[in-house]
Length: 106
Image (cartoon, rainbow, N blue to C red; front, side, top):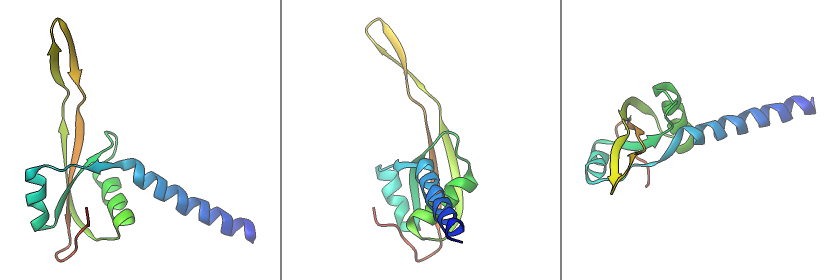
């Protein structure tokens, strides 16, 4: 019986680690801070994460109810410095709408 309890603890720990893999950081801009008044928060997320995984991760980490998730893929931008050319890394953003009255402390 002890082995079953240990396995459950490992599984719950694994899920929380996966939740942190999907969310990278808060995307803090003037527009995103204005969205917090409407209980919407902007995160930079993993490129491979989908809406369902993002929703579960936010609910698990912050303990809030998520109503809706919108995802934005920003492509890499070409950048140049002198003759050398390269690309700025593209990111994936998620706008997460919470239940009315709930908020996340940033």
